[in-house]
Length: 293
Image (tube, rainbow, N blue to C red; front, side, top):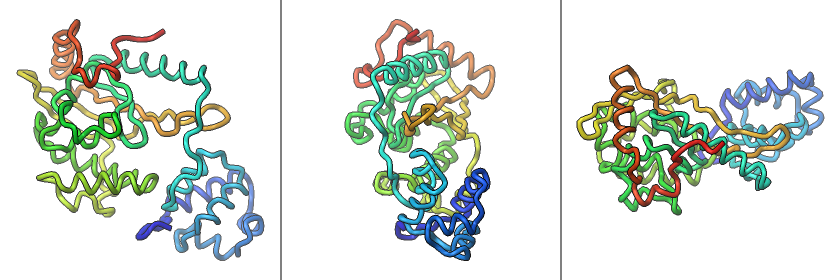
């Protein structure tokens, strides 16, 4: 178990749901994984923390697929056991076409596809216009990809064009704390870097703040003479799996929706303004210009 992490009620709830769905009693499951029924009962009720090997045995005994096993491990505070498998060529091509269609179809709303480290792997023109303020900041690029988190929280990044940026920053940091369960080393490093930015409050990254996390994050920005109010759902659509095995368990779609008609019209004017122009040179490989049917 990672230092300071506990399995919590989420792990026990998920385990109990799987056991119930598979119609396996606590006694039978305990026998399969070679632990006592009392210990299993404590685990399901959040009173005991399972070791990593026990989590893997539980997942195996319940017939969990790799994606579900990874989720169970994350809730227990452990790293994933199954890295993203290499997709077939056909699957990769289909994913790219789907991504292009979704991102282009989201215009004029800003939309991007993020990887497991919250780096932008594809985006539409509206997102590129908003992110452009941070494109030249070398420190927000991570192994050749644009870090959505660092660019959003850097004093010279998106927050420099944001009004009332603190609720937005707090919600992003809370999301990082959650993602730390899945990738502790990656998000520990991100949190350490973000905490060095001026204006970031230490209490935002405390686990106790997660209970108040909003389902929608407000973002109010000013680009040129356009004032735009956006709402970003935190319940993001995840590209999780094929029918049999995990395909793209790490990628997720993030879309910022105009809050009102004035913002919708402002986004349309912004889209018209950039039509026919080129995005920032560093963004060019990642910007979707139109649907790929």
